[in-house]
Length: 424
Image (cartoon, rainbow, N blue to C red; front, side, top):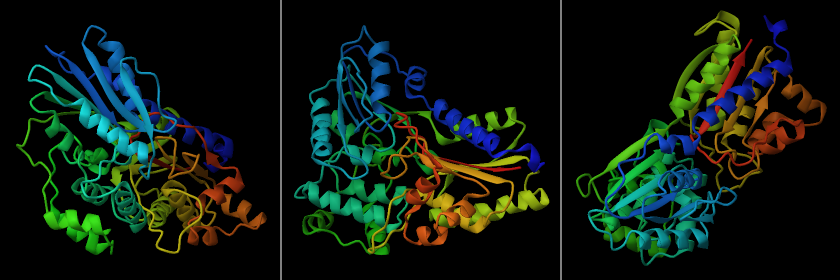
């Protein structure tokens, strides 16, 4: 069976699966399928996320006959013209001064509206950093310090966003609260495990289910020290809006499960049996790689839990716990692959791809990478020791040296990570 699978063919099928997954989450098409009834009054479009500019452009084109204005924040390099809707670019994953300015513009845009007006919120992954309005007396520097500590702690995206909401003027439903009495409709592209609307971009238009008790437990678990001003906010324990505080019309227009289903269709067309392991896999990226290596070996040796040729598909958002020692270059997808490769130790007939659907793995310029059966051997021939790079959290550099990075540029959508392990 292995002889039928050349390296070139395996790579081509893996890349086709990833491309199909990304295409399934095309923001413009998804928005048009879920637009609400046009308002009697004005429509104010607000939004934040890596896909939100493309979403805004689709709304502007579709509703040419509606009195429409608004402002949407997206990541640097992800902006597109959106007609009457202003697009601002800010920083991700760490907010900057433009993130703070964008948050204030969104809050100002929803002021003074009436019950006949509509606030259309276009929310996608990445919005937590892209709009940042620290709760007084906090400064942007205070919020950045907390954000960096969370990113390095190994906390899950749900935990990080619970903390972010409680130190913000805009997250955790506060944007929708500011828009009252206007009707608020939220169109969401999910990038989080479980598709919880309150977690995506920290839920600026969604009632918050987390509490200060949750925040305090998370900060204690990960030993995160608060800046003085943030500690003052915590002492006040002012809660975010909860269920019933305002009407919430939330529409999920694209999600990781749909992306994995699209990848599975490509696999079937290539004569490969897909097994979707789930779209909400979390945990340490390298440890997830070790677990997946065990499953791939079982498929290869015993035809369990599926007979080859097969592909193990999964999504979600793993974490990389860096610690205070710092790290090299890389993101959770390349770290997953390096952990997988070290555990497979050159097992024949197994290839893998792991990429972030937004085209950016971590803070680098690659979406992820491809692992081949000979990756570790090729690395050693060039003096590269996979476990050493893994220990230094320098997975990007490893796959860059092999020439196996997957570089797409910004895809202008985001349904989280796509992982595919092909077993011949």
